[in-house]
Amino acid sequence: MRENFWEMPLQNLKPDEWEALCDGCGKCCLNKIEYEDTGELAFTCVSCRLLDGHSCQCSSYHNRHEFVPDCVVLTPKKLKEIAWWLPATCAYRLRIEGKPLFPWHYLISGDRESIHQAGISIRGRTVNELTVTEDDWDEYIIEDLA
Image (tube, rainbow, N blue to C red; front, side, top):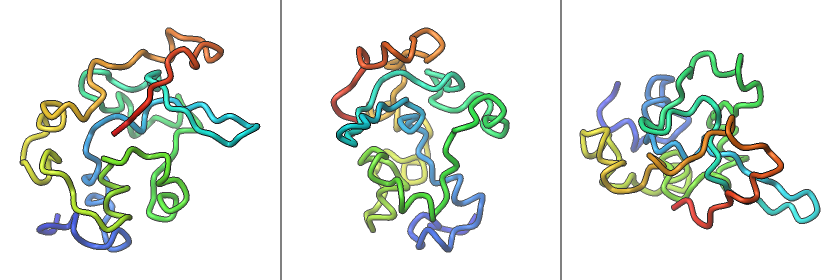
């Protein structure tokens, strides 16, 4: 990977650099509720069935669509459409908004644990969707994903 690639425009990133931009917070793997009548989006602490709640990583990333067909594949084009539902701390959202990465991002700190130590990840704060019915997700709404 190129030096300081994360500072480059997103459309100039190579595939491995794009993937490396993910900070590993796990927040994008939390289920959301979209209210059809208002268009409002509510975030829950109910995680995708494939999310490892400790590492905050997908347990089957390369095969995830076999298990979760509607899992979003984040691309630069898709990012422009959905950046608003990514947390304010998300590296992809920060970069599309022209902002720098936070000091706890592993590309800056050099340590994948720094996001967890800073309390930014969802480590230990989720409930797996296999244990909660979708009808009950509204009981797991969280206020803020920052």
